[in-house]
Length: 356
Ligand code: HEC
Ligand code: HEC
Image 1 (cartoon, rainbow, N blue to C red):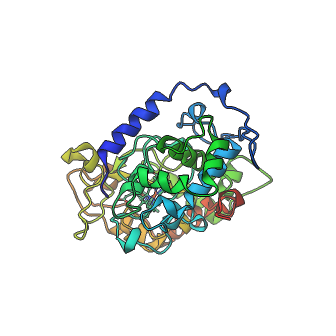
Image 2: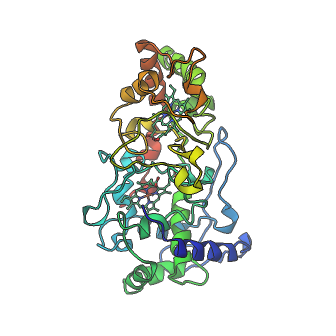
């Protein structure tokens, strides 16, 4: 995926120049159907602190609604079809179901598996290699990438300006009412930061809600997971936010070097962001290139499939030099039982985030 660095830098500057917009000055616009009222954003009690600077772009009813429209808007792409929601499908926690790597305009094939979208307000770096350092900047990558939406902001702005609804929607959502790159990105972020997934069985158990208990198998799986996986998939978001080499064999088709594409450091070769495991049951296929179809395949990789590298993560090298995480078949099944408790159907079927 190619990043247009000029656009990227311009947008960094735009975003920096609007950092000081005070929270209180958000107008309570009454234009049209929606009122520009602030939406309630509550941090779930078992979650880490917020990373998104929400006071600079607080989600409002109208901003969120505009963001939702834009997320499902084909006009953001050169073929007027490939919307964000084309690759990020809600029922699969906003991943591209069945697509090993994502497909963009004219069937162009990308090299990575679409990431799930949830709890983005709690992250500070985005994509598998951390190429985007702010959520407001992340959509520039898919919008401008040839293999994704292959579009320019000036074309998008022209298309939205001549649309019957968008001029009013932007008027309602933003004080200056302008259809520009900054407001497009802010609206998308308002929509995406509201996508909090925190109502899985596991969450309810953690928060002691309504007598929810884990079954003995799930409980045993949680203990095994804590012993074997939390050196990387740590905390309530199941990632420590680091980039690691988890021993996947080099993929000769793409030879994706991961984090090193961003840092230029050979020590970062083949390191990828430790992914969040929430809703993992529905986000198959797995890994940055979608190489594993099932969770069984993923667990088998950790047990028996580790490829050695100089920078292979130490937690995948046992003291006797053997590679991998030792697990019996039964232990693998228990871990999968636990991973399935992370599925949040409230989120997956939440009407607020759906296209219609
Ligand atoms: C052609 C398919 C495709 C389209 C269209 C697309 N994405 Fe993505 N998205 C991906 C892929 C693939 C990744 C992983 C990219 C990478 O690691 O380089 C991703 C990653 C992301 C991430 C990072 C998630 C994280 O946890 O780090 C966000 C946010 C995101 N997309 C939002 C959007 C938005 C907003 C749009 C519309 C403007 C969009 N995407 C359009 C495929 C797509
Ligand atoms: C050394 C750190 C590390 C350890 C230990 C580890 N993982 Fe991972 N895990 C990663 C990284 C990094 C990725 C992403 C790799 C990639 O796509 O290139 C990943 C990917 C995954 C995925 C795929 C996620 C997706 O969205 O595609 C699953 C599922 C997973 N790990 C489960 C586990 C389980 C279960 C354990 C314990 C048995 C475990 N991991 C142990 C670092 C680790």
